[in-house]
Every structure is written in structure tokens, then in C-alpha cells.
Image (spheres, rainbow, N blue to C red):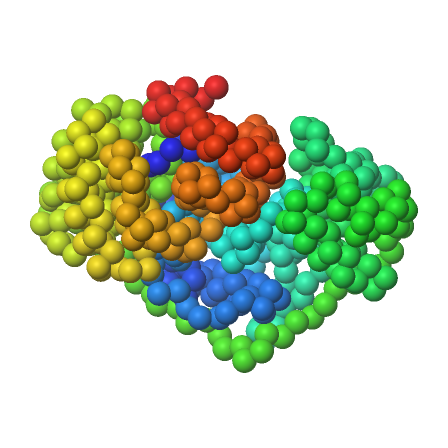
Length: 529
């Protein structure tokens, strides 16, 4: 676990015992799916997600090359029903969620639909009516976020981030590899197809005030409608691209909107009229389409035994949750001393706990040493071993050299894994010495491989500010400065960007460094305020 501006939720999570007797791993070019289901069901889900990736690549003209490293595949945990996923999220009953993370972004989605009986797997859509927010739409929406920020390092306004993701959420995949784009999200029908739009377009496009709850909801509903209109209305062709380019060039939102779209009141009236008509769509057939290939593997019994701990660790823990997860991992590891999966899970859980209680580091090291004794070439174990030395290095700088040794081993085993590069750079920063050029280059490579990770973005921006490269730092911070789900933190990043734009690079560096240090302090102390 690393410092984060967003505090993790603190609700205690305990998954029920497995409702199915088996777990399957389904691996494709861009996904690793762990599914508590039948093999056929897991395979079908993985194929569907790979089809979404193919569709997005064809729409955005992105290279179709497969990912070389598992660390860059999205890992999807598929288990339980929406109530179970809600408990894991700490937010009631939800249909799924996604967490961008260096070296292993994760998503969680239900395998069952409690509305159809606790034992029934989700069908093609997984909903009981057209107006339900179904798990597939959530999964498609969240993966679109992952795809957008991984392949396009640009500053997107909040309404477009969510509006584009909602457009992809309702994508219809056809058996021949083609797909249909443009269907409205029926689960937002109340907001979309009422007699009025609650949030005027001008407020959505031009306001820089703190977003209200109504604004956040409008990002999804009005954002979808506006994106749909600007995409399919011939008279508006090219305006959306012009607007996004202006935003990225630093133009104020109001100025960019009016320059691209003209009279915003007129646009609002057109949008209201547009939604009452027949909404167009498009049928797309990707060039050179071939069906996704899926590699299936039944998890071993020890892997199944530790899956609950793995999911809770991957979801992320806070000061309250960390001891519970670690103690559950201890019980399994004691029962399965020769299991690599159990010892690795224990090492990760103990390392997470050590963020809040440094006395847990010896337990983490003992567990990872047992894991390495079983699999000496495990990249995951090597990274954990390096991170243990790194944590000790915060108070004993001599440990940083040992940490770099382990990160180097991990990098030699997988040069496309961003985590060893990222932590190698951090060893120099926390040691208080100037990072060598090779470490900075490694940080830049880690950023390129994990554009979706906000922590890497912040660290690279801080390094660029230290090098007096204000414009580059600004370009990296802008997507975070207008992030749709982080209003308080977006304000902090906006303040840093404002300093850069005022050519106060040293002040920007000091402010960003102070904000990051304060976020780290709060996280480790368990202070979520």
C-alpha cells in the first residue's frame, strides 16, 4: 500500500463462505478474471470483456498488441452478488467497482443476481428490468475509465469522462464481432427523459465552482446526452474535439465551451429537443476481428482457500481493516505452511498492516521469505521483499540499497512491470539523495505503463517541478486536477496548476510536496478527515 489522497473506506468486510465449490482463472490479452463460477461462465465473461477492449480500440484507433506483463492486465474478481460486492466496497449494495493501481488495477463484480435467487449466475445482462443498473453496464463503464486514462494522457472535464463511459456502458456486442454504440442508459431514464434537464449545459461546461451532488449526477446523465448529441449530430461535427483540445491547452472551461459550441443556451435548447426524438446509433465492425482467446485454469485448493483474503487486500485496507485481514491470513498460512499462495497473501496482509504498525514488518518478512523459498523467482514476492526493506529505509537509510537489489531482481524477471521501477526511484527520494538519471527514466517508464495511477502521476509531477519543468508537470497534473470523483483533492491539484501557470514553479513544488506528505501522514495515522 502506498500513500493516497483518497482515504480507503473503513467498513469491516467479511465475505461469506464460498457459494460455489470452484474458482476459475480466465486469462485473455488484457484481463485476468478470477471467477467463482463454472468454467464456461468464467470463459464467457472473459471473452465479453476482451470484446469490449477490442471495441474501444477500434473506436479510438489504439494498437491491438497484447499486453506482455500480467501487471498491466486488469484483474477482475467475480464473486457473490451485489450485496457481497457492496460489503466489499463499504457502500451498501453496488453493482461493481474499479480501483486503478500501479502494477495491478482491480475490479470487483458479482457473479450472481440475488433478485433471481442466490444460486443463479448472472445472465447476458444480469438485470431484472431495463431500468436496473446492472453489473455488466457498471463493468463496461468502469473499464472504459481504465482504458481512457491508460491510453490517453489528457485532461478531460468531468462530464465527458462519465458521459463517454456511459456511452460504452450500453454497448451491445454481436456474435460476429461487431458492436452497436449509442443506446441510451435506461437506468438513468428518470434524469434523461423527464420534461427538463436539472443541470443546464452552461453549468456543466463552464462552471468552475465546487460541484454539488446534482452536478455529480449530471456528469452521468446529461454528460451521456451531451456526448451522444455532439457525436451524432452532423451540424456539431468536430466541436467536441475542438473543445477538448482547448481544455488541454489551458483555456478556461467557459471560454473553451463558447468557442467550440457557440451560444450555450441554444445548445441547451437543442439538447432538450434532441432527447425527445429518435436517438441515433451506429453499428461498428472492427477490422481484422478474430474471437478472443482465453486460457483457463482451475485454481488449486490452497488458492481457493486464500481468495477471500486476497480480494480484501486487493480492495485495500485502512487502519481498522488491516489487522482483521492479516489475522485471517495468519490462520490460513498456519494451516497451509507449504502453500506459496497462502504465504504470499500473508506477506501482503502483514505489509499492509505495517503501514499503521511498524512492528508487523518482521512478520511480513518471515512470510515473504517462506514464499520465496517455495518460488524464488516470484516477481510479486520479490517486490514485497523490496518494499519491506523500503519501509525500514524510512528510518534506516542503509536499507534502501537492499531494497533496490530486490526491485532490480523483479525488473530483471519482468521489464514491463512498472512497480519495481517506481519503487526504485522512491528509494532515492526517501533516502534524501538526488535520483540518478536511470531512476528518473524508470519513473517515466512506470508512468507510461500506468497512466491511470494517480500516485505515479503525482510523484512524476513532483520530480518534474524539482527539475523546473513546469509545463510538463502541468500537463501531467491536469487530468487529476479536474478528476470527477475527487473534488477536494482536485482543488489542491488545481491550486498547484495555478501556481505553475503563474510561473511560480518553486512554490508549486513546495505545495505539491507538502500536500503529498500530509496525505501520507493522514493515511498512516488513520486520519480520514
